[in-house]
Amino acid sequence: MKSLPDVGLFKPVPSRVEAKTDATTRVARQIVDLEAAARSAKTERLRAARLAQESQAPAIVPKKPAQKRKSSGR
Image (tube, rainbow, N blue to C red):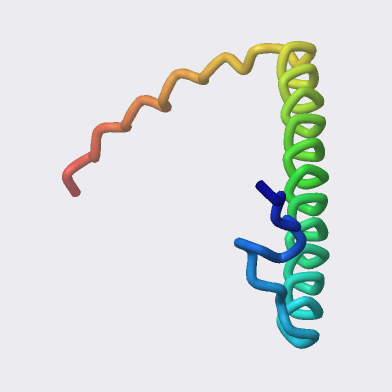
């Protein structure tokens, strides 16, 4: 039995416009993914810096509320 060539047998060959659109979509998604990764890395870095700063800061002791003065009833 002859073997059939598998070039484009089951996959439709995309048109020039579809291929260009697919390439644009792929590049756009890569850019968005890179920006998301950079944003999450920055968030983690800032969170770690904030936690380190909070651990070094002295604990704030709340002041006692000022006592109310009695009115003289004039």
